[in-house]
Length: 272
Image 1 (cartoon, one colour):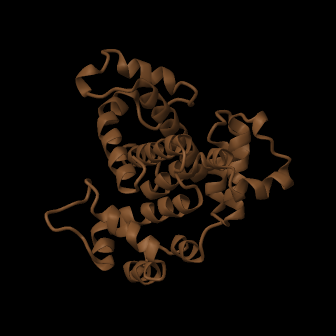
Image 2 (cartoon, one colour; image 1 turned 90 degrees about the vertical axis):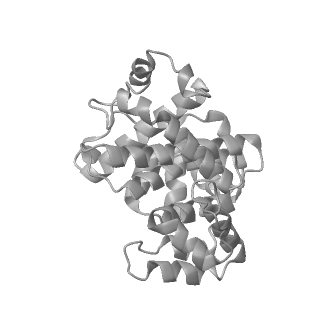
């Protein structure tokens, strides 16, 4: 389960004028969390000439955008530690999807979605898989209620399990819906009538497909891209209803920045 401090951090409103002070105050109650904040503030993405050594300076450097994302990441890190290669791979995928979802939210004008909401959905979309692989308390707690069997796993099973975990953690209903339906490309009429939920699901779906694609592609340098890369991306994202949140040409241009940022974030969290 989430620690009391992390649960209270997640409940904070990043738009509150006292948000930084609230984060600072709560972080001081959890030394381990404070260490992670300082470590992340000194990562390659954010580092300056002077290293950060105080919690206050770390919070200021991270800023509103990064601090809310990091709080969620570290909350999950506490529950699902990257103690095996499989869990590390899931973490890298989750970070890629989160960053891609945020980029798509910032790039598209078709969907009016808060980029940080998109990031959170991307980070949590496979929480059911984390639970399966880690075999931790969250999965064991739900097994008896759901009759869940890892041997029967498929996309919809882990998505349903993930939604149950989100509900257990009392996360917002819209997030539970995104986690539950991120593999469902024929959404119900009820969801079609909820624009915000629908848009977050579509963005998470495209980010998930795109992350899977670039991971399997294993491209080390931009000059090794195939000439028909955008066509390949479009085919991969074909399950999405048209038009997709961001087209294939845009995703091709964003590929390397997404990969680089994901690697930096993972390294800052001690995963990469």
